Amino acid sequence: KYAQMFLRCAAYQGSTFRNATLELVWKSHGMPMTIGDKPILPLLMDMAVKDSFIEGCGADKYRWVHDKVQEAAFSLLENAEVSPFDIGRILYYSLDPSQLEQDLFAVVDLINKGKTEKSAEFAQANLQAAQKALELSAFQSASRYSSHGIDLLNDTDWSTDRQLKLNLYSVGAHSELVVGNVDAAERYMKEVFERGDFTAMETLSLTMTKVT
View (cartoon, rainbow, N blue to C red):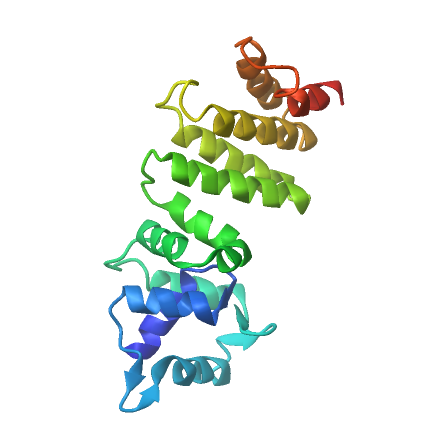
């Protein structure tokens, strides 16, 4: 029972995970932290390593030994009472800023897998992920996060969350252009430039994208 739940909790977090996030997911399922007087998670972690399900890949960090193992663990989530969105939201609100930065992609991916609420806060999380992906030259990921963030703000007009929308459109246009989706990049730029209520300084990033 506990071993299956351990694998399920680890599966939520993608190809790599850390003890801190695993503990939060474990707690979110109402699981005990000890058996008798012994902490349970270190025991389960050692079992998973010995059984060649996971392996260490740095300080306080683990990864699945093979994609097939992770896929099998994912299959345990089918009847889970707690959805990926719920887990993502728990991690988003529970991790401190430095921890969230380390696990940003995994957390935002979990949030995006669910029926995400139309929320400026989660749109901001997608912007953070898009900007980080852009810094890592992961342009496809930056494009995906930007698009998702924009979708989360579709029900609001530009008078609300104006700067957030501009930043999402700017990152989206740049990343789409880099991966060769010129039409998508032009749609983003057109949406902003046709408004006519941004200053040249505000749209400098988009202007540079257009020039290049």
